[in-house]
Length: 292
Image (cartoon, rainbow, N blue to C red; front, side, top):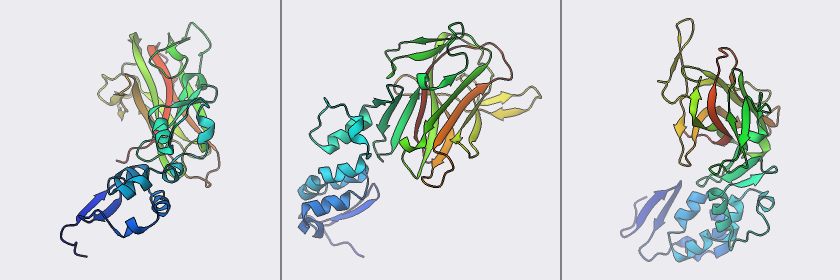
């Protein structure tokens, strides 16, 4: 349909709007709570776009009716009683920008800002680390750069094995997720050069996503096997918070159609058995996968 002269047609965040020069539309004549309910069926990104249309839309788009729908149902249990927010919108963005600790401080929880999807990080304390309770092999240290009370520092092991499990219900349904091991290197970093780590992540009872990863950022992305063959490995990347991460793989949280309610993840090197040292493990982060 041809656009009227003087109208501005915009398409942002999945919403197409036609706004007249007089900043009025048929929607402006609706009650504000009705507009709010319509906006609540979109996304947080769309709500912010809609708020720029007119004063009516701004008021409707900023209402608690809208932002209550974008918050997870369990949000009252996530917020300490001493933290008070003047609106559900401010509460939403607080959960995006400031992760909260859950499960006695062993995990952190936050929301992806653009979609409102749930994200979590399992701390090193909540993971199963082989020899993790033996000071000769691993030690637990405080880290001001970490959101958790302690992190795990690798002293010296030949058998490298880290595993984790978490309930899938803490994540958003009908969402594809990626898992990342979050770490740092220290000065005495050795034993990971040209070493492929076997990684896996997936829903228990289903075939997991498997791949090879490397903790050495200087590797060229390929690992030469003992038989002379080559395998591709996933290299680490830097993060904005100063840590590094390696993607373990992806899985789909298809609510109601799974045999299990747990996700299992692992990073193993138990074949070459060369001595390794110099990693600090913060945990494993699970967040919505990047659409490629």
